[in-house]
Image (cartoon, rainbow over the protein chains, first blue to last red):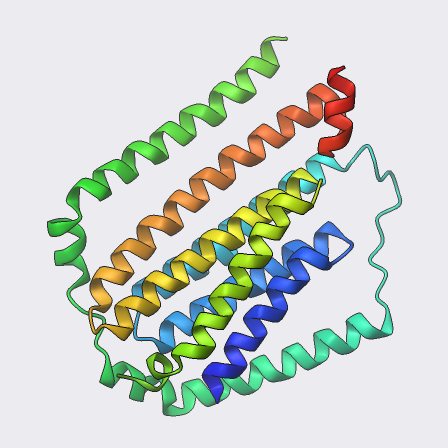
Length: 160
Length: 105
C-alpha cells in the first residue's frame, strides 16, 4: 500500500513537471520526484542509490535549475515574477504534503527496517571497485569533460 | 523478495508513466528548460528500472552501482545542458526553440 502511494506520488510529480505553467513549479515538482524516488530506493533496500539520488537529484540539479532559470528569465520577467497561488495548487500541495508525511512516518516506524532486513544493500564497494572499475574511471573522465566543457562554453562567450 | 519488490506491476506502470512523460517533455515542449527536465525524468525512470531490477532479482549491489553511475552522468549532462541554454539565451535572447529557429534565418 505504501509503495503504491509512493509510486502514485511520483507519477503526480512527473505530471507536475510536464504540465505546470510556471517553470518554478516544474522545478519544485522535479525535486519532489527525486525525493519520492529516493524514498522508494530506500524501501527497495538500496540506501547508497537513495542517498545519491537525494543529494544529487533533489539537491544539486534543483539548485542548478533554479539558478539558471533566474539567470535567464531576469530580463524577460522584470518585476513580474510573483507566485500566484490558486486554491487548487494550495489544496494540491497540502494533500501531497499530508500523504508524504503519512508515508514517511509509516516508513520510519519500522517498515523500512523490515525491508532492509529482507534485502541487504549488497557488497556495493566490491562491485563498484571490482567489476565496475572501468565504469568508475569513465565516470571520472565524464565529470572532468563536463567541467572542461562548461568552462569552454563560458570562456567563448567572455571573449566576444 | 520484499514488499516493495513484489509490486512489479505498479512499479512498471510508474516507470512507463515517468519515461513517457519525459519523452513527451523532450518531443512536444518548445522551452529548452522543459526539454532538459524531460531528459532528467527519462534518466530517473531508467535509474528506477535499474534499482528495481537489482532488488527484484536479488542483486541489489549491481543495480545500485549502475544507478549511481547513471545519477552522476545525469548531473554532468544537466550541467552542460544548462550552460548551453545560458549561451543560447545570450546569443539569441530566447529559450524557445521556435524563436531560435526563426532568429537563425
